[in-house]
Length: 194
Image (cartoon, rainbow, N blue to C red; front, side):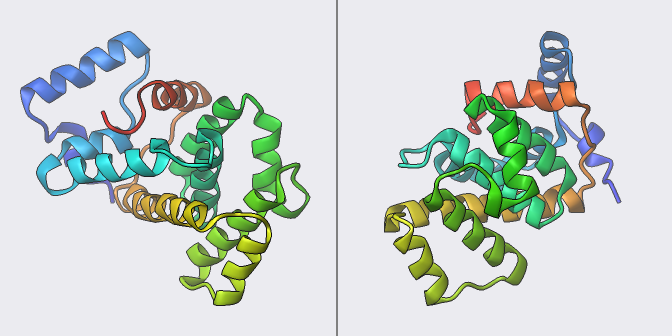
């Protein structure tokens, strides 16, 4: 059930900001962004910092790789809003929509590097089963992924397991293709920090 707070529970200055964003972008602010403005002291500010670091902080993974991880985790969680948002963002980051679609359709035959494939496989298992084994981690390391890259990927996984659950619990409104593309453009330009 969608709480009314996502529609009207904001201070006047925040409502004005939402109106300005809609005016300039031609699209309403997605619910994921609205959520961080509600109770920013409790959730929003911490979530923005953590997600910004996971998605745009220094890493051997590219922005496109991390956005693809977000889309893949979201797909494992069957979170429709987040699948749409991060599929669009990964496609724009890579400038290669078919590559992103190939991964989400069939990871094993997708045209990606083996290290990324092994990492996505591990993130999918962790998301679906809530556990991975030492053997799973050895497979990722054997594919040439560093320990730091594993930590970075786990941060992405954590951020989106939380976000996916919030998106589904708060019944985030699905966007049309134009809305997801506009959100992707914003995320690639401004990141997750606001």
